[in-house]
Picture 1 (spheres, helix red, strand yellow):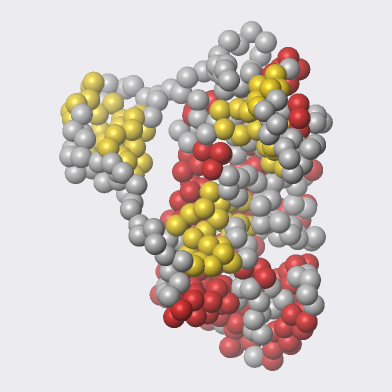
Picture 2 (cartoon, helix red, strand yellow):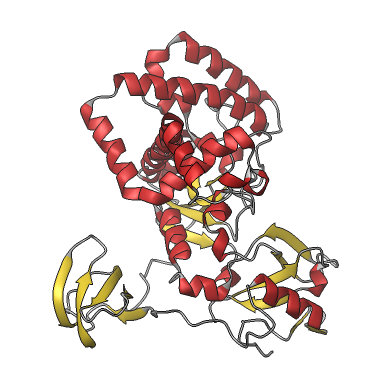
Amino acid sequence: MAVDAWGITDGYWDSERTWHHTSRATHAALRAAMGASPDDERPPDPAPPMWIVHRGATDRLWNPADLRLEDGTIVENVEALPPDLPLGYHELVPRDGWPASPLVVAPLRAHAVDARMWGWAVQLYAARSGESWGIGDLDDLARLAEWSSALGARTLVMNPLHAVAPVLPQQSSPYYPASRLWRNPLYLAIERLPGAEALGDDLTVLANAGRALNSSRVIDRDAVFRLKRVAFDRLFAQWSADANDDERAAFSRFRSTHGDDLRRFTTYCALAERHGGGWPAWPPSYRSPDGGRVARFAREHGLRLELHAWLQWQLDVQLARAGGRGAGLVCDLAVGFDPGGADAWNWQALLALDVHVGAPPDGFNRRGQDWGLPPFVPWKLRQAHFAPWISTVRAAMRSAGGLRVDHVMGLFRLFWVPDGASPAAGASCVSCS
């Protein structure tokens, strides 16, 4: 199987060992989706390239540079890499005026774990208890982790907890999220949120309605969303009025730590509440996260952005509490995200929005599969020094002891299907060529 300069393979073997050649039409469509013109022989190289070294490396630099560490520390006039550089993503800034270059300090080998252990695979939305509001929540997860640990289990492998658009109808698939950087507030245990006791009877009425949803075998996410959205608004207002200085400082640190990623996500949420979950259908002035109208909208709706940031903070708090109950948590990373969601809005310039990720025909699905997820353009992802992928993995690992990647092929290649074409007409594209 040959691969061209754009990462497009010349064909694929199906499950019956039949060769399918990549057609000229498919090849042209995929090149166009990557932003190639007919005259482009190859994509541009990343400039400057990433420099990846192992911890302890002392390589000499071509020119003296200032070293900006990930934590903000600056080491001036470096001529060779210091041997005590911490793991992480740093930056070398040449003192002669050349562009800064990313410096990645990686471990020599992956962390080793005891392979002889057992645990459960948990679909959290279905792990309901008598205290749930119609859907399994993070308090249910904490109880399950504690009970499992007492039996000897050492891990709980969960479904993706990724965020979906805060609109009706609620997206039911955890593998079609609006964002892989953030989590779904439906998993919050409402009565564990600060301010719950102060709401008294008002919250009791909502809780009774939520628990009544447990009588149905079908999880009604829309009904859960309606109830929890009311609770979120009331609890955030209560917290805003009653929070002490330490709580406000902790929330401020959370917002500062996550910076632009959190600001853009909360802006998306506030816009979605007003204009719907799919950003391509928004008014044109809101379709780019960098637009002036978007910045003005964020200023004018700052309290709404703060509410969505507060929910994400509370999700971190509750997930960390569940992770400390014994059995370690293994989170799940979906293979992609909704083309109309927050991540696609944020990273639209790096995506091939005219194609979808899918799978060729096989013994289980003779027609092949089109999952409707937009892939990153490989050369554009390299130009961005893989920043979206780095942010995504880090987000998935917060409060988790492990990560399941769905699918691991996403680390190497994905099957691209041109918009409107049959999955059988798609082609594999190397993700990191």
